[in-house]
Image (cartoon, rainbow, N blue to C red; front, side, top):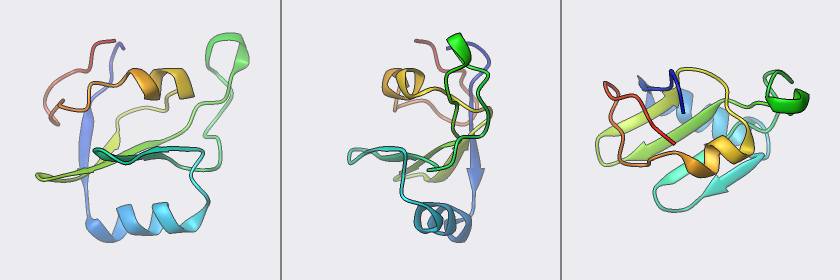
Length: 87
């Protein structure tokens, strides 16, 4: 996936976003989810894109740009905040 990185956020921001809306999609390991409300509909074929979030042993993270559900499922969960994630 081009131009995607993980950016650190606070635990409070992560928890607020997780609890504000039912997640559009989530994974248990690592703990990742898409914010329930679409950010826009600019994905391929005007598909919905969402803000991605992740919790791991190094902290709490949000994606640098919105992603579609298929992009979310393809994310490399081991990526750090300084590495671009390739699909």
